[in-house]
Image 1: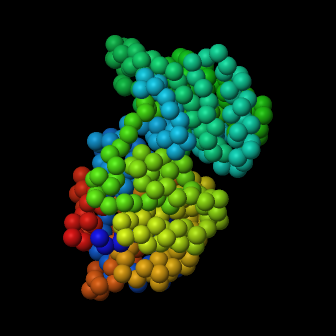
Image 2: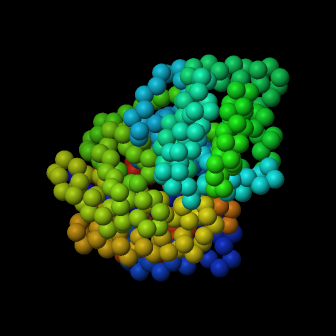
Image 3: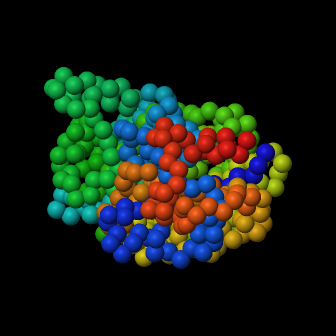
Length: 398
């Protein structure tokens, strides 16, 4: 089977209407990527179906070849799968995010300056304070963790029923990055009373222990679930190379090989060379055909409002990742895309079709799409909203 490498530059796409001087993709110097684009199938694809928040769990699930409308049942259970956490099907798993607020609104949706040691210490303090309740905190990474709510599914269903009886809309949660500058009191009041209490008490505890965070936000809830094995769906083995627990969880759920390393950081200092060689080593085995390489840095910079940092992260992919893949596996099909838009101007995610290229050295040179940018890829093919990119790619290859 043709060797395929899918490079996911998380959040690399932006909103051109918010970038008067050009998007980070447009401003970046990417000679390697530009050359690849001219020998590729290029265009726009959709990763976020209607009704879903434009987040990485949904977008990456789509890019892995799993339609979210069929398979997605919450973000937090995916991250729990990365940690090997097992719970009852009646329990709810919640994503815990430490953030900062001022005057009742979220101003820093991710307290990313919290270290691993600080995060674990804070979770220990929260666990001690919540002892005896039906909720258990689970430490994960720096500013994002998990909470297990015993029999939470029934509690949430009852909460939904009460809201329906009062003529209120269904209860829906959003990540703090999607709630910036919105009054939190109104949103918090929609949560079940028991969870409101935990969030308020936990926020007080955070504020007493660190200047980096004064708010705990619960979202992305769901009960444990599974995915069909990738090898069963696509008749080949695959791997995910990433620093991010969310991607590790998706990989474990899809029974992919999950490849991580301390040098994979999820930040702009991540070791792209090591990521490239990890994917190549996996593909050397005859039975392995598809490697996903996930790069978090563009999204990280976007959430910080750092457009220049986002541009630099894209340029590093061009200088440090793609040349190795092209040199070491010249006959491979190399896909470059992103899971969603992360406009630096809003520090949040946004809806919209994302650019992609599918490069192969034997493809004839095309002139319609000259660069891997939002505007240029708009000149190429446009997949329908219910079409998965990996499905289209495999059909064209075969």
